[in-house]
Length: 320
Image 1 (cartoon, rainbow, N blue to C red):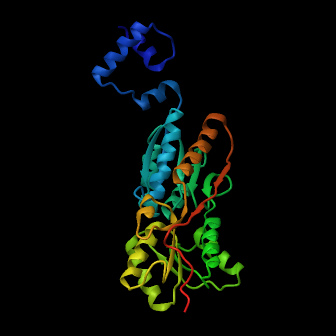
Image 2 (cartoon, rainbow, N blue to C red):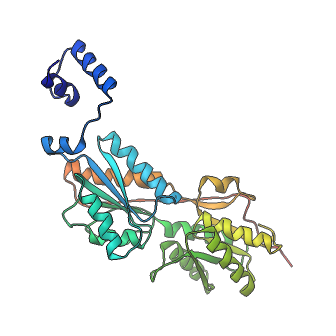
């Protein structure tokens, strides 16, 4: 069979007979041939890669969002590459962006869940189509954003705990690096709306161990009856420390998490949490980017609303 025939089968540019098409596909399978994306780009002029820039890939938030991006991108004929921005230091940011720009990239999705993501967004070339994905975006107006109204999710959680009869709600927050996350802002706003002075915030790194340590400090300083944690991971670390202190959940302390990771439903007791559909955030981010790439649309915003999932870790405060 001729080279032009093989090319027509692979590209689909010109119809060929079913007999020739079957013969080409058999040969491709036997040889283990894989098309070269860079070569295709040179010939067609169309870039077929979407890059994801993220500070971490192991967190449920990042992993779920990336999966949503991949699902939509592949359906549209794009492949996805991932570049990890290890820190917000200029050298790390430049290294991650350089690895992306060395590829025939059509556009970029930045997971702005942390300071490395924010630094990467600032450093990207202004003419490169880009979208920010995350529940707490602080992106400039000229950038498309797929976000979640995490502030309203935190308010829901606090309103629920106050409605059960708790006098206040303590908070284990993610480390803020100078500007509070919207989950923390929602917690504060809900308390102030009820005339309650917010108690001190205990900031944690993104780990159960950090929450375990900070919960120990909180138990030493305060009479806690209700606790909102900025993630389910933090909630699980806090719950372990509460248990070791000889206290019971929810009899002594009610606990609410954030994100609704799979394990939260099977924790003991099952964790009340604010559900965040990270895959949906990723899907919406990919659609916003495709709207720029395929239809030339300008920056848009797509915002989802979280849902409070009530389980066994919350109850009215003990009387007396």
